[in-house]
Length: 301
Image 1 (cartoon, one colour):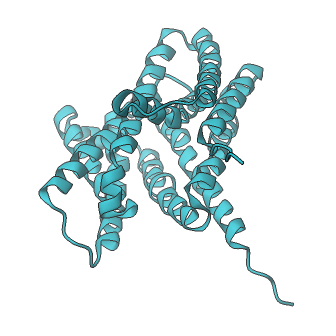
Image 2 (image 1 turned 90 degrees about the vertical axis):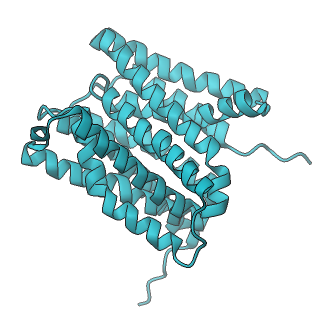
């Protein structure tokens, strides 16, 4: 009996869902590592150190037979790598010291709304009424969950939420300014080069801020960092790229809505984070608002 291969659409949806869930596991692993007393600078360095060979391989593979980078290209890659991967990742890891993985994922999921706002502020791109309402819905959801967490964790939650929000802003800046370089270099080549640059910044930051003895962490932290670098960093990039090839960026982004839900479930099951109607309501508002922002406008008859 012959078994039919999954359709292009089905395979694309499966790849997008798997990539989103793998991405969302990062916060869970970081929170688990913090239980061993490691700090954000060391933890980020270990993640990037393990991921660096994969990123270099990605950049080499995507750049085969392509024109070498110009000086302007390299300046763009360094700037985007610093802002979009190094600074964004550091702020995210630091913020996770103070807030739950669920709130972190909801804040980061506001990214499409931040890209819209940056386009309006920097390039005078118009925000439609529908998009404005959708953004208001999304931010009300985050505020709902944040208010609940503030009552439980106190002022530390405000600091952590601010750090993660700044992480989302810096990554939105990366997305806003990367368009021209993506067209010149290709998405995979740019991602490989920019993340390699970010790895360098993370390693240099560790060398300046921490004594070398700080790298002597429990074995569990090393394994968690390796898992974070491979399963939650490199693998999702490849899965999402393959999904985009099959179903396009729009449907891939909408399928990625499973990410916050998977973070929420893993946070409850693995970390013992709270799960109540406040969190459910906030999550629904954020997902609904972002879905409206990323959904293409209806065509006029």
